[in-house]
Amino acid sequence: MKPGMQEHGTRGAPSRRVRLLLVGGGHAHLGVLASWIAQAPQGLETCLITSDRHAIYSGLVPGWIARPTDGDPFRIDLAALATRAGVRLILASIVGLDADAREVMLDDGARVPFDLLSLATGGEVDTSSLAALGPRLLPVRPMHAFVERWPGVRAAARVTPGYRVVVVGGGAAGVELALAARQSLAGGASAPVMLLSDDPALLPGHAARAGRLARARLKAAGVELITGHAVGVPDGVLLADGRIVTAGCVIAATGPRPPRWLRTSGLQLDVRGFVAVGPDLRSVSHAGIFAAGDIAGRVDNVLAHNLSRSGVHAVRAGPVLADNLRRVARDPGARLRHYRPRRHSLYLISTADRRAILSWGRLVLSGRWVQWIKDRIDRRFVARHARLGRNTEALAWTR
Ligand SMILES: Cc1cc2nc3c(=O)[nH]c(=O)nc-3n(C[C@H](O)[C@H](O)[C@H](O)COP(=O)(O)OP(=O)(O)OC[C@H]3O[C@@H](n4cnc5c(N)ncnc54)[C@H](O)[C@@H]3O)c2cc1C
Image (cartoon, rainbow, N blue to C red; front, side, top):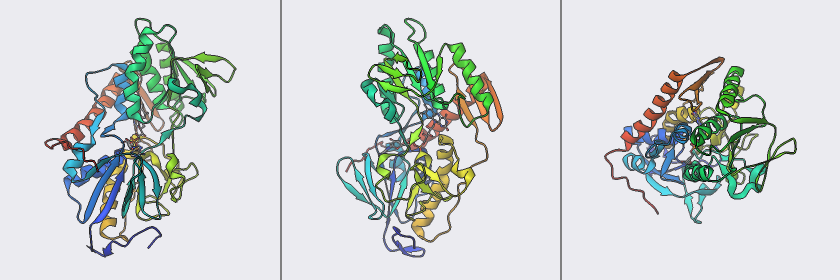
């Protein structure tokens, strides 16, 4: 038995219920809840600890910014899903983990023990070079805070002369958000939107044509694109050429970094500081701990190691994670399934003009039909989880 793993009982006959903690309402845990709803796991007592009652489906957020709708199309009710899945829900943030003692620490000081732990809290945004902005800084994560603050930014931009929105980050999220913000603020005073990217090729990880299409769309939409490293100052950003660009709001979409509490967890981490997992999504140092989505870093082979951090992989890992948690709860030495990412994943990047860019390996296309497909896929995902949680009393348990 590997260190950190508790023997649950003899093979096939657990002596007591195994306590499983799911931490974070990330995409992979939606898969676990769906699996538990489909078939209740035997011998497991499951508890979900997550910072907010709703999971936010990020794929729908740029569209909501570009064309605000009544209600929030991107919210998935975790309380309803947990109720149906027979899972206890604790609304709290974890601030620490002791992997050897098998305990998580919550923001209210409580310590929660576990036999099995699964982490899907996603990452944080690296805002270290932008911190001087203070309240003008709007990081994309936590996403709940982001979607709560955006309407205030839009309102301020409409009435404040000289208000500018700057988006930092040239990846898919930065491009989508800059174009969505531009669309949202068009008309009236029409606050300018600027995108800053320290990588001259936009959309790193995608074929060059995707970056070129994004650049052309930014130009057509009137979003100024500046390349180079930017640093936050109290009233805006300091560019590499020494210019200061004043901004009412700076959106940080600089990609995920590992949550800080991982550093002292005792878990083996990958070179970037994410939880080092194998193909079975199990920690390479602690056999009773699993991780999936943005918080995990595959260390088993080069293809997996270079896997982009995206909702696509977090979603696909869900069913494998669910299966492995069931298996290991029954038998700590069980053979586990592997999550085998496809060589290329399909990415659909909204450009806020009712079109989107399709990127799949070297294939890059764009058009209205791409946005139509994206919208359909994203809305179906949220609707499926709404259906799963329906007909329940959506209770949020607290300790
Ligand atoms: C604007 C935007 C658009 C995007 N669009 C796409 C797209 O179209 N397709 C795509 O594949 N990817 C997209 N991404 C990337 C995608 O959002 C992430 O890769 C994905 O959300 C990662 O999922 P996750 O399950 O790891 O974590 P998350 O989705 O980040 O979920 C984390 C969960 O854990 C909870 N949590 C966080 N910290 C704690 C804590 N300390 N304690 C307890 N709970 C905690 C949160 O409340 C949340 O429920 C987009 C990202 C952004 C910013």
